[in-house]
Image 1: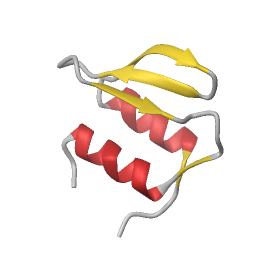
Image 2: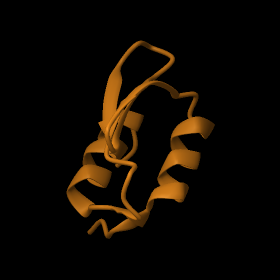
Image 3: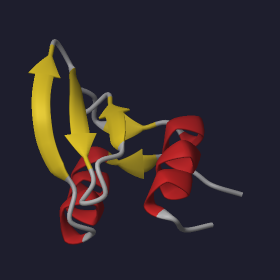
Length: 63
């Protein structure tokens, strides 16, 4: 089961995987992977919810 994750840890994980921020609107940032896939992360909050983190892991190719 996936639990809440600190935003800083998630952003570092995305950068380490090669994702780059494209644009920010309000408290959400759209990131782009090296393959061109995009993911919108609500990074204006202290933590990332379990559901969003699960979707991110899927986008990163992890389980």
